[in-house]
Image (cartoon, rainbow, N blue to C red; front, side, top):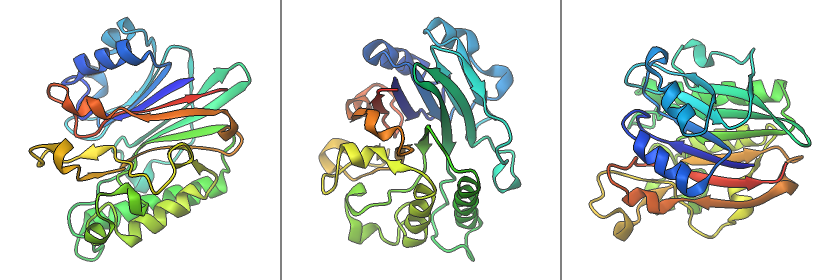
Length: 264
């Protein structure tokens, strides 16, 4: 299975980039975040023409939105929470049949959390922490097996997941309250496949701000996008690639795709 996860930052706007990505990389499964399209306007036909007739999506106007695209049939996973009691389209899950049995795939878009890393002063940050805690509790109560979790988790948890650990410790996405909670969620049944394939101390980034005039020269990145697998799938991990050249494509997302090859 070749799987790609990407915060596309508007599916309809960047459909041509998605087409080029598919042509160049030939993935079997694609998980997108920040699709920013309500379900009635979702481009089903265009995506089917790109080779992905099997689609599962939750979307809303202007914000959030997640989708799973597959060349083979998807079976929706039901019974997952509406996280934090909000209908804000941040999670979709499906079962995919493989030669060795079904694999469960979770696609998440975690709240960004605003700019102030204080839950008392910033409701968005409080929401982010609550989301992480609820997700951790749910996976502990529902231990995953043969599962993959991907998405824009909006946290760079490790020292070498950011351009400067010291300078970003008080910046939302790398603060201890976030990184600690994300690690607890990871330990609710998963392994960090990206860091298994590309261990520290190698720097590993998936996001570069639009504010950087020359993202490559400054290289002030963060690893906000993740691929986790349960331990039973980890022996099948072949490669992980961060497709950073896409950051130079015309009208790019500020995130780049992450691609995993997994024997299942």
